[in-house]
Length: 495
Image (tube, rainbow, N blue to C red; front, side):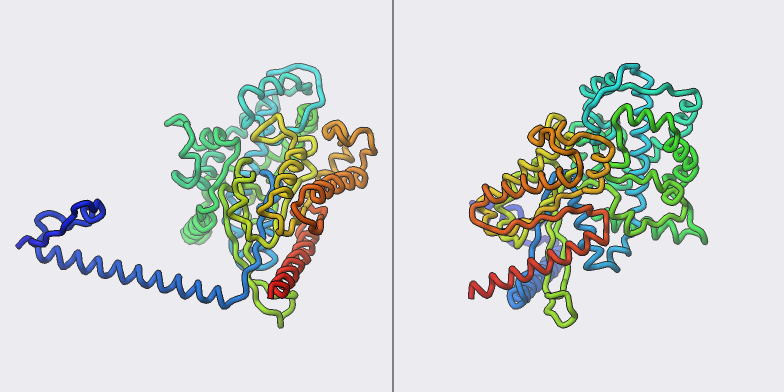
């Protein structure tokens, strides 16, 4: 018979919501109470585990915390990958297969840059000019600026063979869409929050959002792709090739021909497009990365480009002093990824307990503009961001470590004759060589650090190319030990 239990809900909306269903039988009531008791047991167990972890953390040495900061494409994710490779190499390499889709998308995006440049070349027959190198694919540029930029290009004539090649590579459009579906399934990123056409493709949706495919840091895309790879490889003896892998392998020869064509090379130079300087460049390894059995190497993973949004935390266990007898200590790396607004002062109150901030400023961006704001020079933007970090009173006691990054690309641009002083006006007519320009930027960042820091602190600066595993690992080992020693010294002084 129905239960007659009556609960007083006067003035308590929560109690009203917790009312049992009307006409509940005694059997249903017993089942509901049993479910509630089980839910409470699980909740209490979770609370006990959290309390146990909190007590364990209090007994353990305080973790060392490092915050990675820098503008988009500054090398934060690559630096994080270096930390992972250095501290957890087995786990890092276990994720290799999941990075294949990212490398494939990088390849397709590079080819799409060339194909769209060919479309621009056909549409415009105007003189060559000196303009900032593009920071992203032409098709991903703002619609109001694409035509004005393209109208200034001087280009060599394209032949009928080039048009046939372009048509043969048309299937790469569906490869791009398939890869974006893999990496950004519905609900996994902020693509859903944008105002897009209801029937727009995944590629359209990705291009509409900040001109680049992005995944949220909380979305476990690597685990998802790892499961997909395992499922495919378990089907049959050889495993069935997925569509992107099959099409990329079929188009490999045409992509190789396109990239090495002298006319195409001249056209890219005329349009000031330097694909080899952009993140995620793999066209020099097409035969290898389009092979059906391709598995990314450590170097491939470091070079692969996938934009992340939001804040991510990564935990490692390291030995103090780097020797086997040292005490274990937790190292936590925080990566603030995403748009330009996410690396400004709004985050500072949440990270005022960091032991160090590792700031990356890519010197190679001196002749580029921001993807988020094409009126702002990339290197000047890094300088302004560095100034805001140095001057923030909440970070006054935090060690600041500067990586003047991408020096390999920076050196190559100077060797190619690109004038540093043409874009960084304050440099003037000084020598256009690597030693002079890099020393100038080191002094500039150092002066800001000295002038704007709330209190005196040491200036740590390194010239880096974080895609170079060997040199970067040596720098990161030294930084880890320096931070730990400084942290221990501070604890002793506090006692």
